[in-house]
Length: 615
Figure 1 (tube, rainbow, N blue to C red):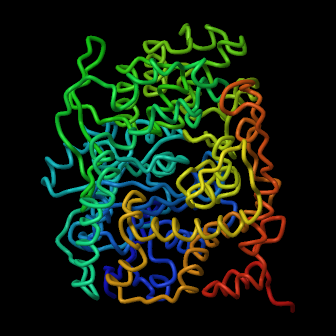
Figure 2 (figure 1 turned 180 degrees about the vertical axis):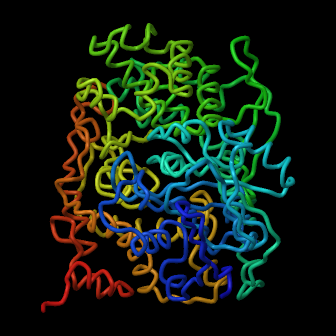
């Protein structure tokens, strides 16, 4: 097949066996790769209701057709599993170079089940497969492990690996690659750690044949033209300041969290505090720019930050989500601590969103007397105290004292302490990202009912060109806007394209040029919805129904805060959901309707599962 290696690797760590299977052309055409192909395979390979940290759980590392294709922005891959945080479907997307390098090693995806007796890593070396004792890299942090692997295998090696957080099976543990790139949300690193799988290590020289190389080059040329022309201002801004370019504005508008979603701009986090923490107000030396594979934008960077407290030389620039989680969410204007918190999360393999949110939750609990200084190991966890913030993060990194509890996130901590639930801001146990669904109310349905709850990058109403605020809610037609936005985002993620590249070129056109597949307008919409539905079907088979998608009040109700930009907001989250279910073809209990599945096509196996033939 054009654009694919055509090979899938299945590894069982319980007996150190593996099997190479051919990728079905129908699966490639109907699901592409990433979260969609991953969901299709895990639906087939996993039984319902398995323990996400158990032997029968499967974790997958899935590329997309635009990885290793020369298509610009084609550097993202997806880790898929059942989340140990939410017990729902989970997909986490990461950039860098792992996805393309895995295809160079000869495989479109790797799926791993079982539990090893001792720590191991999987080596894919130009199609050759080995399961190797991980003793030389077990216990090492991200950069140290990568350095060791390069020492062993050369500079052309790449790896998706866990750090100490994953080894400790911390529920918010990431899968790391390229030093500071993370498949971060939902705990995929914990799943790897439970299997004693330190890394999937890849290198090779395999190439994928393209169906229409001239068309690929033409789309690339048009993309560069847009970046240097009509879209130059936005491209230059992103390249210069990264995803944090809009951080200060997000604080001012109350899009970013302030004081664990209880505060409001700018009374609880003044603009003069936000500005130094924002990417454009930092006075330091940018030492190097960072681009993911085939990315012409380069939103990443490394910086030297002068600090007497921590070594912040060559520190990765914090992303927007990290700035919000470690800045305004903790009412923290201490730039050094934001950088250090980001460094610790990268090195120890923690999701920066959940880690920051967990410390912010503990801060609110401390302020309200719910948690005592003694329960927090003597740390006075006050708003904006950078030293206290890092002291608590270090405890999480070392799985020490209260850090052994907080490393699993806010829901786990509240359940452990049997208090503090009123301070939670979670969707099925996963902390909210740094975009307020009371402000951008289209996020509400995504946060609650997407198969991977609590995510802001899943498309739909919120990112479909209407950043609607809770003060001007118009529920008319939201369902159809929602499904169109979903379809585009599902296609982007499954293709292996960065979401920031999506605005510069038509993703489906590029995939058609790479693979030779072709889709009518109706087929394009069906393609995206099929990708969504296969993820959702995983949860349906788990027995999840509407009542099981639980979300904290602070996602949709304005009190707190009682003043500021989001005062007096109450989002009708159930009406948004009703509109969406009607538009996509679900019943009101979230079960896909038989006629809708048949109309989309390629889902006959789901029809048989959900609506088995009568005897």
